[in-house]
Image (cartoon, rainbow, N blue to C red; front, side):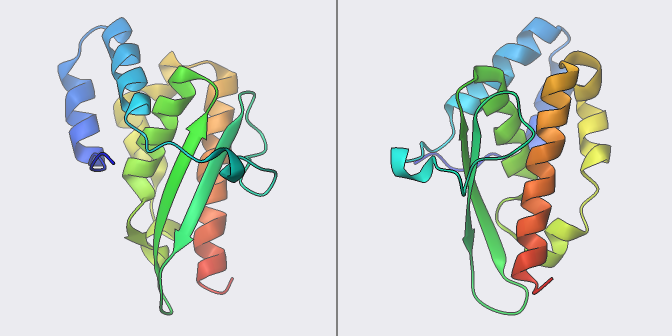
Length: 142
C-alpha cells in the first residue's frame, strides 16, 4: 500500500508544473497510486451518484464522537482516479468535524481545476466532495 500523499505536496507539484499536459499526466500518476478496491467494494452503496464515469468511495469510520474518517476510492477513468486522489489527499485521515468544515474550493482554485477539466468532471468532483462531507455529517450523528 502506498503512503497517502499530502494535499500541500499536490498543490506545490501543480504550481511547479507549467504545462497542463504535465498536470494531466501528474493527475493520472496520482490516480495510479490509489489503493485498489476489491471488486466486491464496487457496489451500489459505494457508487458516487452524479459522476459520468464510474466512481466508488469506501469510507472507514474510526471511533468516538468526532471520528477520523479514511476514504478509499476508484474509477474506471484515469483522470477521474487522479481527481479522487486529490479529494482523498484533502479529506482522508481527518476528523469528521474537520472534513465538514473544510473549504475545498480554495484548494481546487489553487489547482485551477475548474479551468482545465470538463464541466462533467467538475460536477463529478463536486459529487465526490458532497459524498465525503455527507459521510462526515453521518459520522457526527447528523
